[in-house]
Amino acid sequence: MSRYTLATSIANRFTGVALSAGLLLLVYWLVAVAGGARSYARALRVLTAPLTQLIYVALIVAFCYHLVAGVRHLVWDTGRGLERAQSRSSARLVIAVSLVLILLLVYRVWFAGMRAT
Image (cartoon, rainbow, N blue to C red; front, side):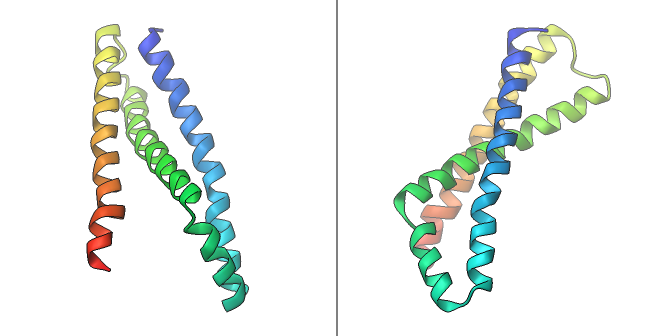
């Protein structure tokens, strides 16, 4: 197993754990919605705080990487792309496509969303 395969596989596992932890924010929001207006207003202050927005960016990064790396693993499950050179190329492709997705999502969520309000 090459170091590229190992590094990208470990990163895929870490992003999966981060996404699982990020579900706590979703649960918090849902509980606040169910709790009524006062509960929702309190949660809104937490969920729109600058630190929370940094967590959202980290979750976007984790989601994009995990998605693209997951597709790579699906391709591997078919028996394709397992050679060392192919693995190295696909590792670079996973990183490049993830970066493009991250930039598109961050732009769409923060910058394009700001113009709409």
